Image (tube, rainbow, N blue to C red):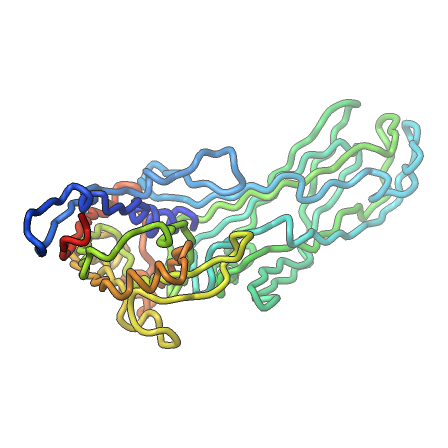
Length: 398
């Protein structure tokens, strides 16, 4: 969902300057007027924000233009043969009988961070998949069991699933060989899997067991250091449903260096031509910072007064309309006007505001009816942004 975060916020990342006012001159003692400043006129697609595949989270587009969120976690589990089969801890020759046995391990939640930028809300994927890729150097047929799958939210455990089903891991038959086994976990294997992302999880952890149920004989000499490794590959097609999904972002904007005395007020106009089946409300906060750059205090908000429902009357763009299959059939246009007074400019300057915090609450079209929507790479969001600044220049400014 980092793609959605980029979709919401990256279009706003524009450095606003007021250099236009430095070129205004007048021979009179006072001159007032207004200045229209076009800032942005562009179109975005989600495909534009798809990151490279060199990180643990990225996105792909399939043959039907459906976007998939992908996450790949390497070496989630790494076990020595001697840990699973203690008789081989110091090595063992070919022909050694290996008795049945098993060992269990729990993954570290800090290793498997999922949606750390999402703050709260409900997220449902129609067909999520987790594939475990197991690379095995151990020459013994070993089972894998996903005892417990746990998704953690900010308050702890959000949903867990237990299972006693065993999957067979293939074993190498010759020295130096590595056998690979892929185990797919989907809603057919775990029926509650589409629901485990609601509330939005921050981490995921697994409790797993590995072992053998029968006596086996080693086909070749072993050292006991042969490795069994497990990677986890998440595939989350954006055939999804969002309910009050809150996302956040922070950017730098230093008001302390500006000169705003000439500006009496400014109106920002944003025009969205939305081809995405998502609607949202955004609140913008202004904050000062500590000496280390950490957010210290919320100074003001752009919409509504502080200590109220920040999404009651915020920056809103309307969802495009979809059909019953979740595909967009009609775009929607929204016009948003944002007024910033001279007093607000001065307040932000006096408070030495250095950070802007954005919070957006997203919903899919007709989300309360349980409709799933498909986010396609061909969808576009048109954004036009302009500002009209009212100003007064007096003789004191020259």
